[in-house]
Image (spheres, rainbow, N blue to C red):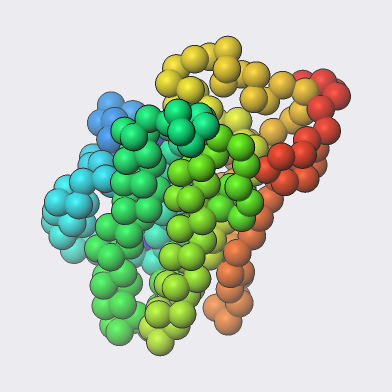
Length: 261
């Protein structure tokens, strides 16, 4: 596989695993995130382990100026992007609507919705230009959630932000059809990464409790699914794909028996 891949939120969790999956396949990878040291460490790991080119870009997807500046200044060899993985996202807090923190709401909307929009708007012209010059079509992967399909208690704005990702993905698929750019929305269920630790603001006990009694998805599982969606024949596009642990039916129902631990 010889595709140039751009992954947001690559310093941990899904993003890191996705970057590694593509690097293992021999793809040059642009990795982005807010944590410079983690980006540099991942760059070194991927280059040494897989002998591929890796370009780290430090910026916050919430910052429109930073996003457009970073992508505008990409060196020529890093501009013909084939695959964009809009992975950067988070949950902040899990509270009743009337008790929720407004700053948490802003953070989720600015990251999960506006960040995805900014990065996509900056990268898509590069995909269109590449198509015009080489005939190679682009592919956008948007990381949603089953929380974007079904609301659960205390999910309010996080769920809303992922419903927005679903709607944006559908709109992109229609509007970019004329350019031949594929759009795939991936909707994971419970997956054990730093997600819950971030959501509960460093409360390890609360974060750990979320995954007790069943075997959750891993970042590696998500990376496998993302990769699969991008190696299908040119005329095939998986529009959306929802996946959960086998002990999870939807956002609410789990079968917890402690055997998964």
